[in-house]
Length: 192
Image (tube, rainbow, N blue to C red; front, top):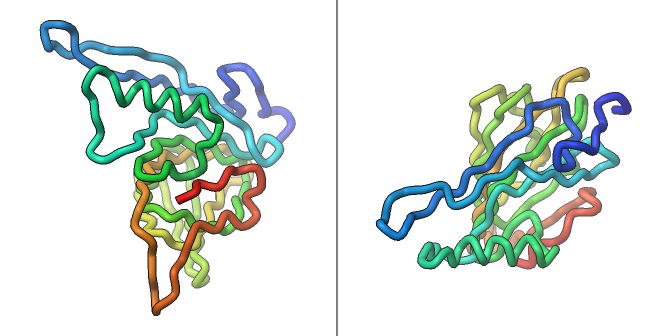
C-alpha cells in the first residue's frame, strides 16, 4: 500500500482521521475534569497493512478509580511491552485500521469482545464458513470464537473499535478452547 503508508501522526499508517483520547477524572472539589488527553498512538503490523492503537486498558474488575490507580496501571501495562490481544483479568480498548483488501489470519482470543465498525465495510469470517458483511455502525459480539476480519474494499481503509474482556476458560463439547493467534505473526500472546 505504498502511497498510503505513513509514519507521522504518532505512527498512524492509514488515511483515516487521527483519533484523540480524553481521560476524565475529578478535581479536589469532586467536579469532573479532563485528566489527560492525547492523539492515539499507532503500532504497525503486517508490513504496514494493519495498525493497532490501544486507547485504554484495565487490569481488574471492578476497576479501582481512586487516586488514579487505573491510569497508573494502564501506563504500567503499556510500558511493560507485554500486552497481548487480551489483558488477563482486565479489558483492552483498541482501535484497528485495516488496509484495502487486507485479511487478518483466522484467530481466537480467550475473551468476550465487542467490535464496532467505524469506517468502511468489513467481513466477519467464522471458522464454520459463515461470512457476515458488516458496515459502519454494525457490532459483533465475539464470544471466544475462531474468526477473521477482511476489509472488503480494494481502495479504502477500514477501521474497527474493539473492547476485549478476559473471560473464564471456554469449554464446548468437553473440549477446552484457548487463545489461538494462528498466522497473526508479531502479536504477543495474552497469557490468559
